[in-house]
Amino acid sequence: MEDFRKQFTLSLLAYAVQRGLSPQMLCRQAGIAYAALQQTGTPAPDALRTERLWHCAALEANDPFFGLHFGESMQLAALGVIGQILHSSGTAGEALSHAGALLHLITDLFSMQISHEAQQMDIHLLYDPAQAAAYPHTFRQLSDYLLVFTLHELNGLTLHRIAPLEITLPHTGFSMPEYSRVFRCPVRRRENVFTISLPRSVKDEPVLTANRELQRYLLQQVQLFVRPGDGQQQLHTRIYNYLLTNSYLYALSQEAVAANFNISPRNLQRRLKEEGITYLQIVESVRKTLAMHYLRQETYQVREVAAILGYNEQSAFVRAFRRWTGLTPTLYRQQQAAGTATT
Image 1: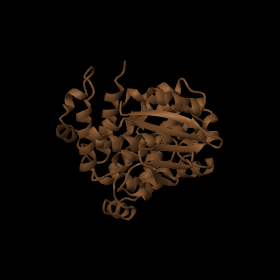
Image 2: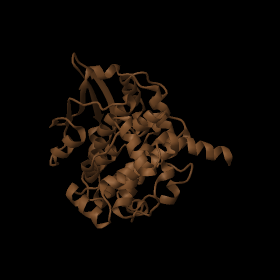
Image 3: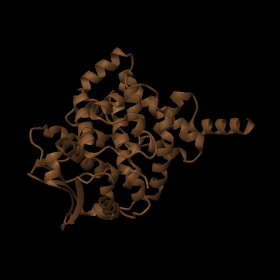
Image 4: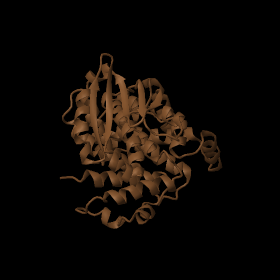
């Protein structure tokens, strides 16, 4: 059986690389054998080493919201457990129930409980206070990750953004505006409580079967286009890779990307200008890369490619593609097919 805890650890390290951190350095500080971790059959790090890893990652990234931003990034590599959910869920409510049942595959620190009221559905993260006290960094960062990743899971499964009514969490001494930005709803403090409150109608939202195919496809394909580096790339390369690996069905704003890299939008603009590029140019490069690949595969219609890449109108995508290549998407696809047929 797949070791989901180990896979999650590797996903965390992959995200750290996007943040410009060295996975070898983080593992060394946490007492984890990095080379062994990558080998088949080796176990996941124990709770103490995982605690150190969370602590080191947040410290080295200078980001107290490391887990929150990790969850916000919706790392495709972390979707192994979600694959189990996709095959056995018909509605968002069922998916959440299955996710709760599978949470123990990733952690013993939290469990999930769902309650229903007349107008809303509440998702509760329950935890063992003794373990929370023993592993405070895991508790803080993983709770943030699970809350925001749960919302992203719902958004992915239903093909549109679900707006929560309210988020409740017990953290003190941290910036509530950053939580509000990520969750896009009011956030309040309440001791010992982690809760996502959603409209009750979310429970019956259908899980779209077309979305399952797209999830599997991106898991297999998107890493082919990541630009290589050792964690010391220029900022524009790190942003390119971040956008590419998080391109699934939603467009990340410049503000969200800046927060993920723990810098202000103004500072992000300034540093990109120093590198001779703009944020919009990076976004266009990612869209061009994915558009050309999707069109070569002939799996999706042009309108579907446009929607996947975040264009509200097919005509806007056609204009952009012509600007990139001098061709319409249809003509590009025809030329690619003809070239393949003659080789």
